Length: 445
Image (cartoon, rainbow, N blue to C red):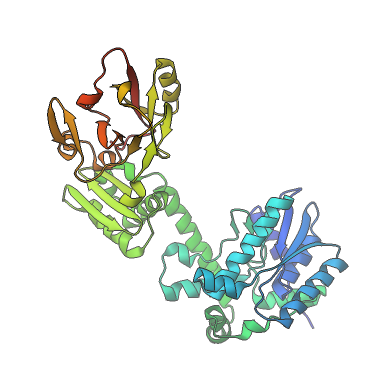
């Protein structure tokens, strides 16, 4: 019987996506099924690379899982391939992490693979995803709702992961195993349609293939077109950021603006949700000068032409004991307390923006802290008790800047706020003075 397996498709895929450079070491995710058995066999016969395998027992199928591990050991022994194995109680992991079995199993596998790579120095992880897997993924994304990126399916390469079989259909994989004499085993759970992916695999896709026997090939062609379009749009969007301002962003095409927003959300730890992306686009294009939009993980602020995201107040709060030298508040800002200008100049090399003042050292003691703003804050200046809120409003700085201003407090009294003179109790006297510097790596102005 003639089989429809063409090894040149494997070679072309490896070459087209630059998967296997000379001398690379590859760790293959090896379940013992037809896909991973064929992949391991092909890679082990590829010149100029080092190959090993990793098998994870998910503790889902009892005796059958033990059989799988035994098969993988024998396969690797016979082919002189190093094999790493591990057991993980995935059902327990799924319960503890509130994840589905499939997601918990996938997370456990990749965590195991990356652990081996770190410990033993493997360069890439090879997984045996094929064109049918890609079709299933696209259909799953489509039924849940997705954008262009979701319709691009499984990428041939991602980070340190390669997928050399991604252009082969499942039938071609079976044909390859039989043509090359590669043994494999079958996972009984592949027929369990209680798993959503299996439902598509066993019920939906066979019906679609009745309409188009070449479904995998046609879908692969469509995915290639979509990937090209997505790549172009992504490259254009990379030329913009939320720092460009509302006027520049508002005229962008939706396909570009939405990507700029998504990038900004990810950079600022804001959850990317489709309806929120649309709301942000609307806010940017609104004629209202000031807009505050609450999102999952943060808030969008449109302040005249400014566009920025800020973290939730609970995430912006801080209370740090003050010490001499540089006091780092977060990745972007710090307060420095110095007796010598030499130290100030040294720290200025790290930060781009600095606001400098003087404070009487008599007010600095073991109870002095740097803290975030609180409702009702007051400071004593020029013989008057003043509301901090009104003082800060007089600066006319963007809200993102004023919300993160650090206050120096001693024994419950605010003694210094950047941009302002110290409290009456902490005025410099020319004898016991210290320099206080508010550093920022970048300005939101």
